[in-house]
Length: 83
Image (cartoon, rainbow, N blue to C red):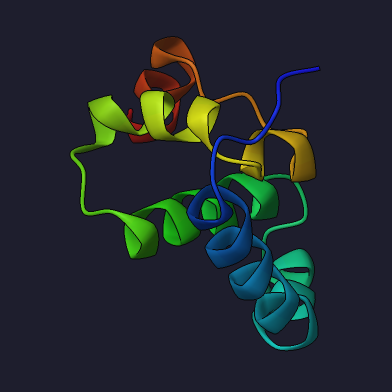
């Protein structure tokens, strides 16, 4: 298991997730039952750091979101989502 390198990587993601858990996640689960984790992952990563879609995999691997979510954020999954 990879250690978290800073509070930034852990604190911001978990704070956003805790807020989303009681607000937007139930709605996303209802409307998008198969891809809600992907949507919330992209939104949280976008909020943490404005990066192009192709660079989000790097940020996903560096933050604790890769341990919270079961979503794969490879380049192939990005391409499939966008097509």
